[in-house]
Image (cartoon, rainbow, N blue to C red; front, side):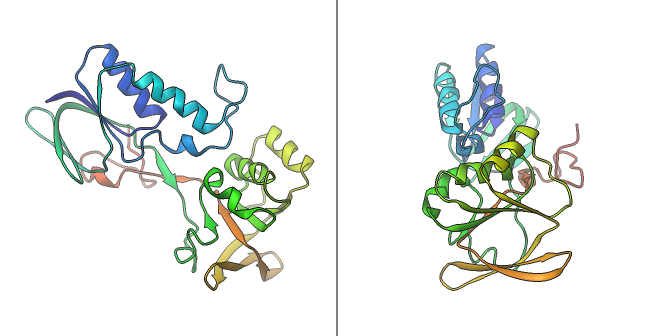
Length: 252
C-alpha cells in the first residue's frame, strides 16, 4: 500500500513526487513516458533561473533531482483508477497498485488535424515533435500548422535544417508571443493566415497538402507537415471517477 501514487512523469508529476517523498510518504510514480513532452522541446526561455535551456537539458535536471529521493517508479501506462475502501486501485497494462491517495498529472498529448491522410502519413512526413524529426527534413520544403507559440518555435527550430518554411494559421490572428513573431520575421519565414489544411496526399511519403483559404481550395507540394495546434488532456483512463468538462479536463 502506497501513501501516494502520482500518475504522470512530466514536470508536474516529478514535482509532486519529490514533495511527497520529502514528507516521508511512501510514494509511487507511474508514467508511460518518463520526463514527459517537455523533453522534446527545442528550447525553453520562460523557466525562472534559466535564460535559455533545451527541453532535454531541463528534464535531465528534473530526473537527477527525482533520483535523490526514495520514490518507486513504474514506467507503464495507467489504464484505470478505481475507488476502494482504503483508497484507490491504480491499474496499469501489467500490474495494479493500492494507494491511499492519487495525484493525476498526465498532462496532454498533441492535437491532430483530423483530416484525410493524416493517420496514413504519420512518421512519413507528418510530424508532431519538431525536436525529434527536424533533422530528417534538411533542405526540404515544410509547412508548420499553428500560429501559436509552439508553431512559431517549431518554425524557428526548423531554420537550423531548412530555409523553405511556411506557417499556416487557420484563424485571422497570430497568437504567438511578440518575441517569437520578431524572430520568425527576422528569419524570413512566411506566415499565412486563414489557411486550413483539408487533406494530406502522397505515395510512400507525404508529397502534397490540400488547403483552403479565402480564395478557395488550393494545393502545395511539401515534404514535411509539422502539426503544432495545441494539445488535448490525457484523461480517458479516469472513466467516471471524476467529472470532466467538454474539453476532457478534470473539473476542480
